[in-house]
Length: 246
Image: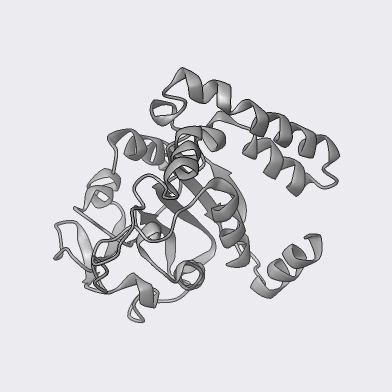
């Protein structure tokens, strides 16, 4: 995970009331180190062994969701950093994260983005997105493969389907608009988003299209997204609302 991405996320988390957290996947344990001993941190990872700073640690395949041993309605924060691009069942993972959070708890998801102009150009020329190569002859279940690409609209939809609200994209300037030609190529998309924003009928639509038209969404090479489990939640009501606005 890029140092700039870690900085973006830890800056956003600073000052938040977090006493319990679930780090899945935990990787090298950087989040436990960043949040410190005041946070009771549990970890999940298929490839790493337990690291210092974790209260409980489970070696587990996130394609099967979160481990059943991780208690429901328990965590103030669930972090899925550099993991959702590796799983084939992302909605299962996000719904499990929703269930493990306390009402009002926070979710943080980081992953590469494939919406920036250079990625779209590469897809047009080659048929494959950056960091998502052809895997013929390389597919081994349980290995560290990039199999599910993401951009802001796709991840927003999955978060809504899982029941989350207050979805926010955190800008990461260090990985945004790296080349001049990208700033030129992005204008058709920017104009399209502005047109959709003018026609938006609800606050949710306006917030969605406003974010779609930002540099972070259109040109960012990395997504840092946060969301909240409602304090009084009914996931079915959230999904019903989403379906009826499509």
